[in-house]
Amino acid sequence: MIVRPLEKKDIGEAVRILLLSFDREISVIFRDIYFAGEILKEFFNRNLENCFVAEKGRILGFSCISFKKHKIFKFLRERMGFIEGLRASLLLRFFLRDPQKDEAFLDFIAVSPLRRREGIGSAIMEKLIEVSKEKNVRSLNCIIHADSDLVLFFKKFDFEIVKMFESRLAEKYFSSRVWFLMSKYISSK
Image (cartoon, rainbow, N blue to C red; front, side, top):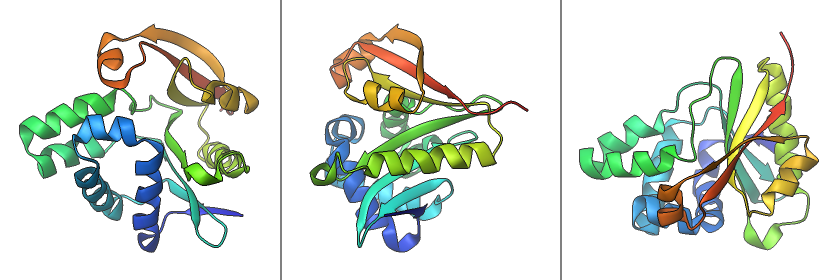
């Protein structure tokens, strides 16, 4: 299996995996999964940087990591109109945080649902950690809901729970009230 940077030719398949992996969340954020697919394809077509795919004959996983302020919020307001774009941005902002200085933020890891538990997510995570080391960040952060199986996955890569928080907004829209901010120490400068 190869984990490599996202290329324009990969976008359709990568977004399909993203939609399958986060269909509930994306349906809430964009109100329509098909519309979301078109919007996300357009966004990634313009923003390939720091996105990666896992490939073994075909695309099996997709991930993005952020080292600076996200571009998607402005894009959504421009593309969807002020009101709907702002609504989508506010909901998405719960998951996507702008990294602080010397930090990276793991936006998502999506693996084809039929290919999970085959080491694809682990291969992607290893690549993201490698890229974070190359960028000399001190920590890699992510947000996941507290009752997710992913807590154990992230702990396998030495992520620690650094903050637990409750959100009524997240409970209302994403059916989980308790969330973790998890962080992995990468390097010191």
